[in-house]
Image (cartoon, rainbow, N blue to C red; front, side, top):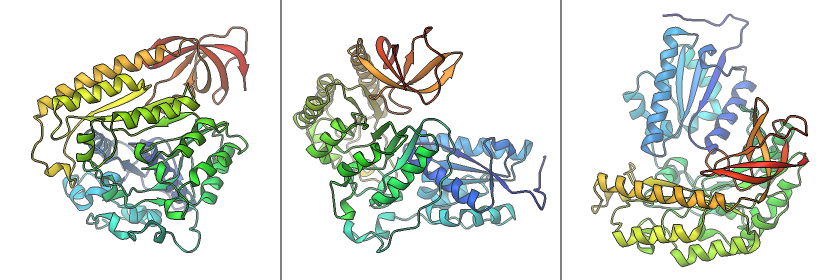
Length: 470
């Protein structure tokens, strides 16, 4: 076994590994900022770090497995490289606490969200040989008042320092934390806590800092963006915040993630669809279309309501991007419910639809339901819907042939550029490749290139530049 002890005048080094959603990326950068401010040296290669911090995801079984695998891989580095400690943080660590520590002794510490403020001291203790007592998980919704307007501190909180871990032209920006909804299939509110909005002044200040760091697209993230402002006394606060964000020097595109259809009001649709600098992009969490299934999910809606919302969107922004996720095989889902979902998907013409087969999540109401479908039936239904949406999404992409798009270049390999148009969100919505443009200089990461769509490959597009670049 090879070990490395830092010299007395050498800063302790730390590498951050992030799994899961863009919300986790922000958490990792806030942790990195705290550590850098408190004397740690940030490194990108885990093999070259004294401590490896793995920011885990605890959303669904596949994500949990990925997080555990990442922890085990990091622990293996202690046998061959510099690392002396592997620390688990994030949703999986918060959700399971002492149980995760017991089942995964390869991790030297399992830290919850309450440890974040003192993360540097925690890591120094672990490196000194201490074993922090892992927390006992609790329902974090009980830590704050029931009434949203009673949750905010009377004075503005100290802004958490942040250190960018990625240098690309897109940066996630946190709007809020937690969720007040009680969806019967979802455990996120229990370990993320109740909904708390960030103050607009803090959001704007961080947005200006991100622009100064080279971010040209701001990706607004939260567990429920449509609730932003309700605990600050103004549920329409997002509509007024979006133009201010879009007006920041250096910011060319603002994108909003995770909208609850039942809370998506006409004013917010207009703000996203028509505000210059805001991407006409609607990440709508439909989850299903059958009113019966949605009620059992503790959600609201039906095909007519959802299609009516999409009509509102496209009346103001005909070329808007629309994405969603659906859960197939929910307890009690009938063949008729499944047909209702499929008919809705065919009518909705969305750009991207994520399909998840239902599985029990610890501590959720749905886990106690007795009318669950057989696992093989859930898998078969998920496969059926996945095949359908792949065809539908490919058709929607083909409808964009001849459309003029503005592509944010995110990578350039041997002169070939790839990025995203306004209707394509980060990571999950496909990309746009730019056809070779021999009449103009090579592309640069962060450049915005106007182009016409000339080909498709599933949800991915190929576009030919028009010569307009900025």
